[in-house]
Image (cartoon, rainbow, N blue to C red; front, side, top):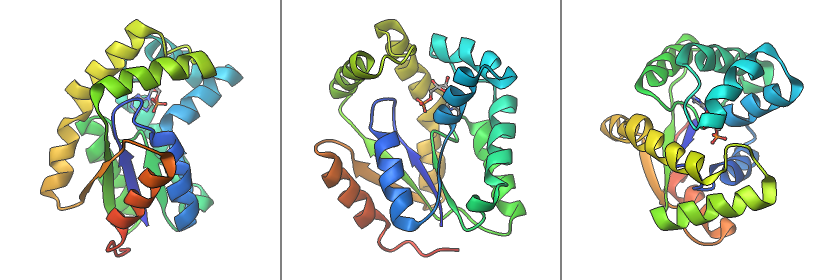
Length: 191
Ligand code: AMP
């Protein structure tokens, strides 16, 4: 099973990604989490990524693509994976197509979580208080929404045209959203 979970910052992707991945017995691969782990370990990749993350901008495609390529090459990702936060640009879509094709598989579905924009900002500001993420300040939160609209929203149409898109209401209780995702994926056949 090869899945993508999309949605604007604050839509609850991370939480849902781990529930859904557990359910299907595949790893949840979050580019944001991998970047954050590198930042805290002070690796070269982390140093490079941090300046973009703190400004609410995307880390350059070459850096991100290589990181994902290495990650999905690991053994635990051979039976499949759920990508959380990747692809986020059209160039990343193309790159991912190549990576999956190389393994002889196909992408099975793309779930997009839809959330009311007002609710998003509230969620992110609340997360800033509880988690203390350095990219959750108000200006950066706003910039991240803009970057999402400009660079990532166009991907929704790309996947819709391919017949892979599953739009899921991301509002409400976490468990209800998880159930909606499962329902939206009920007819997905693994390729
Ligand atoms: P996230 O935790 O998914 O919101 O990601 C946090 C930050 O990591 C983003 O604001 C970007 O700076 C960076 N990032 C995560 N995924 C990507 C990606 N696919 N392409 C470029 N930058 C990314």
